[in-house]
Image (cartoon, rainbow over all chains, first blue to last red):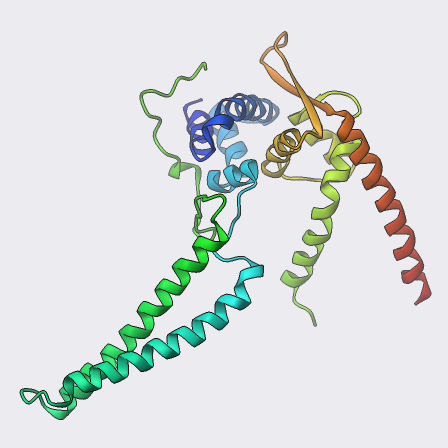
Length: 171
Length: 111
């Protein structure tokens, strides 16, 4: 019982407030129907059912119909082009700036200066990539900002969150 | 040789489009989630519970299904049924399906 309540909580907490109550009641009843149809001890049956339902984050996304990607297909090719252009320009600018900055630095060896210039150039490119990405993710999700979990991580029912005290079982 | 994963990904893609039609076809009468799961399963159209339950809810939000809580049984159950809009959607999807299978049958036989 506790496990399946944790599952219901794990799913509904990711949904918009307006949908939580309805999904909670329906999901609880659906899980019960499935558990009753299984064989074995109560614990075994519950675990089998919850495992078959899968990762709660994914379930919640199915409920809300939210986007499951950072940058979608419409934006992706534009994003890649912007990334190339802007990163090249930013790296070049960083290269020029750091070359000027370290050109007359007398305290360091030639190698030290070259390393500094290269590091500066690379970090300029990385920063540009970061901000371009942030901008595109914003465009993509400007309307509905939703959580985005890593689908690749293995998931088991043991990873379910503990129920908070305010969670009312018979709501 | 095409690898197996690619084949199953393509199969999944093909099935995905038919799920709504399969589901709507069973909702002329009001039914609840687990009942639908079993009906589809026994008809030979297996679907994950993790896909079915959220889909019912989404179709309801889109106005294609109406729902009703039945509280007289052992536990409260949510029953779904086609709304007027859902019936129209079902008819459209069914026609599309018939048209598509017809065309594809012709193409497959040509070879």
